Image 1: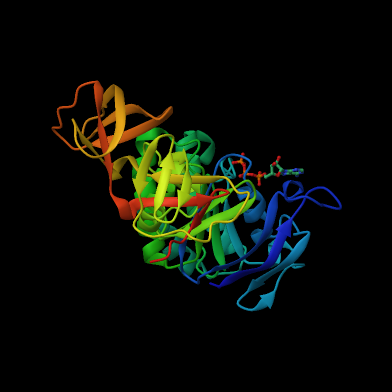
Image 2: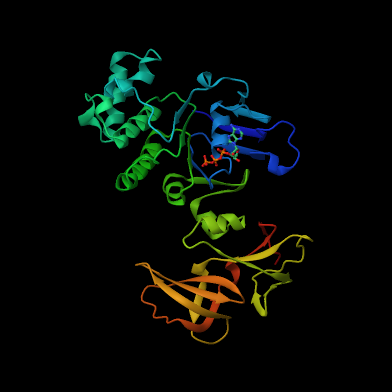
Length: 360
Ligand SMILES: Nc1ncnc2c1ncn2[C@@H]1O[C@H](COP(=O)(O)OP(=O)(O)OP(=O)(O)O)[C@@H](O)[C@H]1O
């Protein structure tokens, strides 16, 4: 196990990068705690795989260093980094049995027969594969093969970290739920540093204690699932996490007032130091807007109410913008006019996409 530190790291696939957009990974400093359960979350093309491959050594960063427990491994090849990696698609030996597949990484390291047997049976039990140990891998479904890949990633207990790159892509949706929570339990039990790459917020939130959110080659927020939800550090985080995502509205902010079109929204704090020339927006979660038929609030017109079971979502227009409100269970709201009342201390202010701290 190891603490993994990325020091002034950046990566460009093209030579002589100049503009930020030339980088697949923009400069970052990041420390992955020993034994932590991390998710690396972001949309397609944001640089997740690049970052993972830099940690495993498949890609050499064009700038900066990778340190394992303080040791510089930037130029150390993958095989010597002691990393287990699980990919999107199964990597198994078809001619071997499930048992032999799981035993392979251990036998390779010269572990004794009884130790190998103990580890293989333990991992198989964790993955509900004990009954299939003697079956040949070629006879198994894609789901089962991917479970073997997961098992092979988890079977060694001497690895610096286990890296998962969208490991549940080929798994049947019903089994996905089960495997996702099993993986979380496994992580807690084996206590190894694990980094799980995904573009699926539910997968990230279920697996990780700490979620690292990436957007356009940049790490835009690192936090617990609750922190990401409560205080998105970037408009992208607000939009990407939560269902529906945060409402983001262009605004003019002066002191403790935000102006959206002809409406004024009171803020919990003042914002005297907003940078010049940046796009100013406010973000309000649909959960932080209360609907009222009339009274003080933002004038809205509800066009549709979607009942999605536990909650209802009102789709509305406000000052020429779309606005979503989450309505509590049992709320009876018809389409038409009303007001939306925001919780003042949950209205966030953003400049150029990044959260700005208010001043009391
Ligand atoms: N070998 C490569 N050569 C050149 N450009 C690359 C290479 N690999 C990735 N890129 C580019 O780097 C950027 C980041 O890609 P990366 O695969 O790291 O993103 P990702 O978030 O993992 O996306 P996905 O979820 O689609 O795999 C993208 O613009 C991609 O086109």
